[in-house]
Length: 539
Image (cartoon, rainbow, N blue to C red; front, top):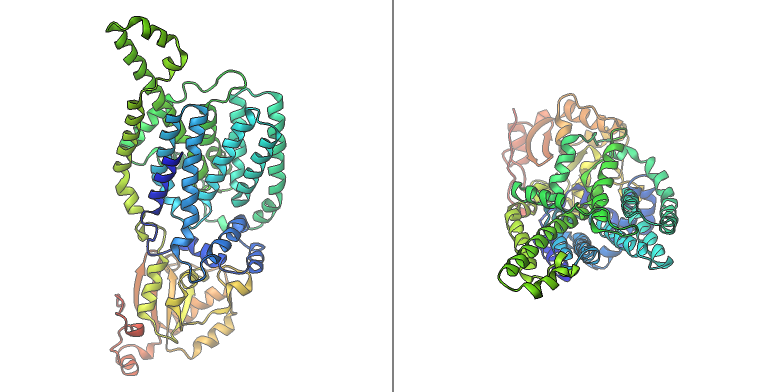
């Protein structure tokens, strides 16, 4: 267990400071730095599903008395991923043998999707650790370790579901495991009591989060391509690794059902890998809810099946080796060894274990380019650090700024120092005081009065807001567009990922008149003596 955990820790720490947060991480960062009453107030309106995680991160960030940064934000996810790799190894060793656990844990550690979420300041790596821990506790409870095992199982699973409510789908996987194991009525009763306790404890979150379902209105129905993409992410995105792991995973299903009441590794791994994502995809045909990170915890089943299939291959090679030795004259002693079930089905040949480790190392090196690319800020949906740096170069203290729509304010909330001194002309009350993520904005009339005396204004805009025909829902957002289009003209623009930074000036200031007033030839003004940003002049 220690080796997979160490490898996962090394992979997670590699390039942990990418140089910029993306918007979901920025939400974690700015919410976790609020006071507990402010977090509690926020959860009544948005993000109730992440409430426990925000409170946990509040404690983590408070441990840094200075200005906690991206590394501190992501460290809990790295540690959780390392713990999950160790738990995957423990499952393999407990239900099969040590080398299966070693291979499964290492496979989990080198999977690119795991490495991706190990470096995110979000809850998904922690959910995966809790789900894998609950699965190990299920195995202990089924094997008759008493009522206390069921209590621990229900407690760990309940906490995991409070980290993210879709972890409740793990109950389907565990029910599948009990069915494949043909468990006794006593086991089913113990599990039902624990599962019922988890479901009851989760009811308040379900009620509150249902009222906040507009937050996931951007999701779309998953299709066959979505399922194929998830399978590739589970087994390895590169072709060579994918097809080899797929073949070994199928081979690992050869002993799915054991004796009555016996929990086999395949009976644990297959439902874990299949049932939660399939259930969420089917439910999403009615109401779109599926995102791969919501079922990241199910990935743990895939390396267990692959390692089990590799062990089947190792067993065949071991038996072939014994038969060859029989033909070389060592008949009597080797016949006794063949009669021994442990020897015949699980040959202890260290070279086979080492060969499996080397194969995993080869798969890792084959995927290193993907892992390296994943550590570049631009691979995330957006790079708020780059946006904030551009603002710091281009704007001066006192410059008015508009965010269109309001959630484009995330760059300012994540990197307030880069916006220091600028005037957020649409902001009425900051998020922490208003119980919102991005603050409460002024009414249309107030916004127009604030902009009436401005000769120029900088706009931080989502790219989709620039598409012809885009019409915001809120009146303040429509007023922003109306004022910019009616009273100002676009002077220059730079686009960074999904965000455009635009300078608008009043028509009277365009050209020579603007140059005379500003005395800088109409060029963007670097703040604090910085370098001017790249601009794209518009007619």
